[in-house]
Image (cartoon, rainbow, N blue to C red; front, side, top):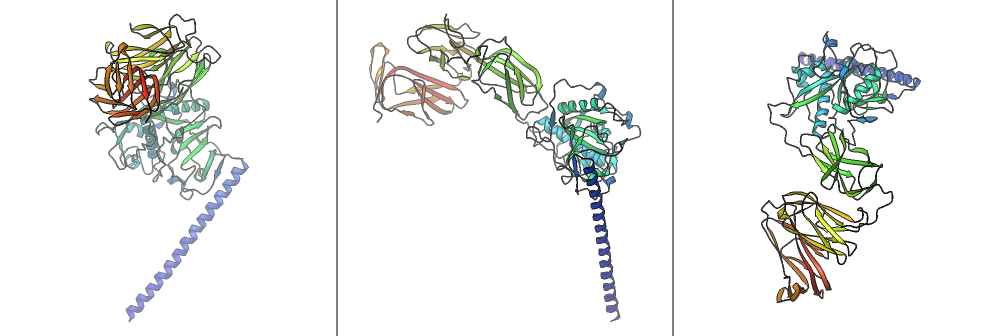
Length: 617
């Protein structure tokens, strides 16, 4: 009985103590909240008085002691430490830069990895990893790569830091011989090289314009940069805007961050912090040029994969030219806006832009410019008038990825050129051809026509009777490759802009592809419903029937067969036998059958001057 009474009394005492302790803890929490609320209110009054460009409020780190959020510490001789790469004294960047840049939002793409929240005084490790992860995304040209490298591994293994602080710059040097792994993967990364952009250990805020210029140049050339700054307690409560501190200037730094962009119009940096997305502008902040020593110790990095592991799977790289689209007319001494997009190629890469006439190189527009998707070119007056100019854009990476625009016109004539007097209808622009082909087109009438291929001995002069013309070409006599066919009026007083046409083709005979096209129309015969009944004099061909049938024998797969009547597309068929049902037709016509194979190559069969009688039934 006594034992039960004692147990009951002890239980009551414990409950009373628990209630008392809970009340004490609750009171402490309320006191902290009231104190924090008072601090933020006081800060808001200061910002209002100073007409500040940033706002304060309760953030995810407002209630954490400031010393637990900072973690920058150096060895005693850190001011003398230098990298093996470039230093601020010899740093330069040769290309022109824009007034603003943000790798967190570059042409609508975020090349920075997700914001993380540091554990203890480990900002030094998070800033190093954030810089490397952003650089990896840029090198791959893939904003979604986002390798999640392990800050914990660096904190536990790097001799230059721990959970109470560390030296991010010596960590860069350490990572040249030690790789950092992913949190959950086998991918590992090392520092290939790094260097100072600015290195002012006196923190006297001198030469601020030089420092700003050097950092902007480095952001354009290397991507995100490792930086250090001094953090005051007001920075914990930053919720947005352009940060500026309104007390005395610091003489040291205590926090590491990543600079990812700049804005010259409002003179601020865009930076990535490691306090989680519940702080600042979703984990980022903007800060005025020249504030809290952020420009004094800034470094760039280049990365490499650890060669003890298999390389990452290869990624595709491509470039698409958006402008000129093709068909435009530009005047000499006028600006031409060249625009392109790339996929799988770093925005840090360099680009070369050239002008071609058909397949022939003419002129280098620029030998080196940024892969930023645009270049304004003033067309020189020395260029000859032509309707067959093309722009070639080459990305100067190890693959030499390139592409061409469609043809456009450059002329010194300020008036719109008239419609061409000569037009090549077949073969089509950039066709792949083999064997004997027919070059055909239209012209103004009874004038001599010269047809030839540039840089070859082949040329023909024919006299035109009517508006249409055709001439055979045996491509087997030429080496495989790219050629330009030209048709122009021989000896015509008409300007070459209107009396000339070109088409670019690729001859491809040496690939053992065999395609034979047979039809139910036998040339030189009277053909009645698919049967050749009688041979006709004068190589005339007559077809009586309601459908044209093509049977294709080939050692490659056939994608489709296109039927043309007088060079006008009529029907596309996808299954053998390929058939074109005629409507009511009476008269002399040309028939062309075009076969597209699995390689993307075209083979033609053309029947000319066929007298067709079809009821369309």
